[in-house]
Length: 536
Figure 1 (cartoon, rainbow, N blue to C red):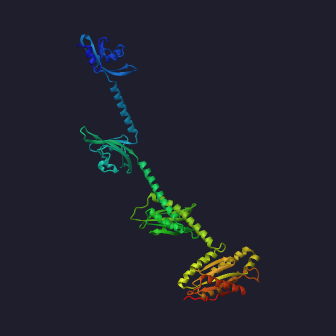
Figure 2: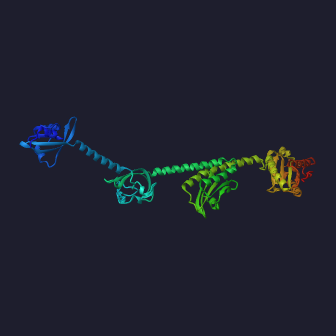
């Protein structure tokens, strides 16, 4: 076989004509690298190349780097040999990169918390990451239909990422896990098609975002509770009258928590018992619920046809009330969010209860005498004005008695103000003993008292005055001296039902009658003459 220079030049790779001892007779331009290596003893001898069943591969220096050449030796004419070389550097590098890429992908899949999968033409798993998924081993999933595990998806079953004919990205799918719980995965997939475009399955990645979604849901519920609590608090604070605060709170709480009814109780210190302060909607018997607070701050149970949720309210760690919620059994029971929200409501009710208690205390102090606890002048006249107007409409009688203590100054002068205060308290007890709960007793100031006898006619008023004068003998131990005994002077004015007399006129008659007793010797009672004007 004769080889000319043209034939060597036409060969796409390295081509050399060599002798049996490796001497180069002819070479094309691409064979220079092989020639240098051959002359430098970097290649096997020709006999070895001839006897090799497969092409030999050698890495040869080339410029500042190296190339990989696949070599083969063929016999030629005249005892010469043809040495052919093919540059496979790129091919080897590509193969190496591919192997490295595959290993990298395998390592990432193995260590990833996500799971990779592939389904075949029958829609069943043919591959799942070695770690498995959803609490199952990979082998337990292979051969199963993904639809068996899907609990909820925003799309139709036939359009899930596991069966879609289109590429999908970041689709949320809730799937059932091996332990019975559900996991939310973010699925991305691409279809697998045959050469003729037929759908042959799909492959993709699922990332578990359950904790993220649970956190999002918890944050959403917290925001919703905050919104509802703000609504309740705003409703309470919009009320000016403290008593209306609890009524507003009961209604707002029932509406916010979807309750059939809400009851708010106050713990009355003087009675050490719960008293209903506000109610909205319907509910059941609350006694068992309130009794349970002896050993616990919370109550949740089903009583008859009601789901009940309740908790105590506190102010500075002390119980001052309770909040009860009722929901009929046609509706679901209470959720964790309901339990958290009622505790927040109870905190606000605790503040409102304390505010109401303080308001009542201030109101009581502003309307009562600090020593005796009786109505003071302002409160007494405000109350009898209200009653007087009603009596005028209903044409019912009433009596007003002015009481002035005789020789009270001597008590203070001789025994001191402490004894004087004790004497005033004894007078208070005497007056309360001779009046009914429907009557009003007040200390107008100093040693002056007043009594309003509700619906009392003249004979009743007279009997009361006589009884109080007889009982005033009990005040003798407080007297300053024997010649200045402590007793009382009473002036009584009776208001007849049909009378056109005003309240000011009635007060003036009682006051005048009392001063006439004082002028005429004290220690007696006097009935004021009836008014001259009559109602038509």
